[in-house]
Image 1 (cartoon, rainbow, N blue to C red):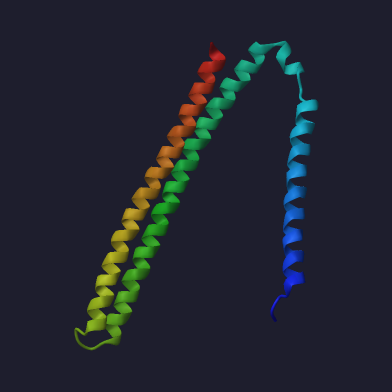
Image 2: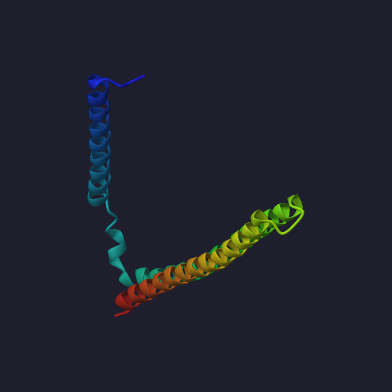
Length: 148
């Protein structure tokens, strides 16, 4: 079923209306937060600073723990990909009687997949470490700013 001109225009209008509604809601939430902000916390800034230092330590601890979990997940995924590639190569090997072209290609592909899985896992783990370090640096900078 082809959509006609009217249907295309209606689709465009619905998309614009949804975008406008989303923007209006975002503005309303930001506006509401500005008028109803809690200014009573400014009465005693030392209590706020202590709480922010504790919160900063908690954020850093959570970032380290989550980074460790993410790295374990990445390594498990890489191991599963390598295992699947090896399994597929073994299936092709069993299906063919001699060293056929398909068998050699399956083994080369399995080796390539395993190599790329290791490279991708290392790259992703490095990105997780960079993100964790960025979070910790940001928290330290915020703690330093409030500490002065």
